[in-house]
Image 1: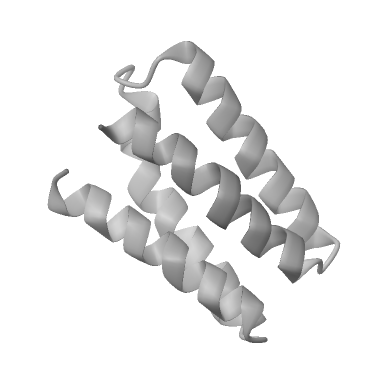
Image 2: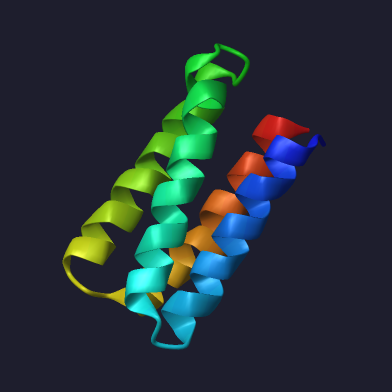
Length: 91
């Protein structure tokens, strides 16, 4: 993996930590920064459509949980779903 991918994973792991420890604005900020890093990759066509669809669904779920202020669910989806999908997409 290259350094861009490392940045994505680091941001997501930091977001999970912040969400689980009450740093909700920091978690939201880390998620936003991650999305900015991910955007070129997701638009590049390098990620298979089936995986891209799953990533989009996970991101939609994260957004919905964030809007509902359910930070435990945000952390769970990122940690147990999104990270795994991105590892497959970026490997």
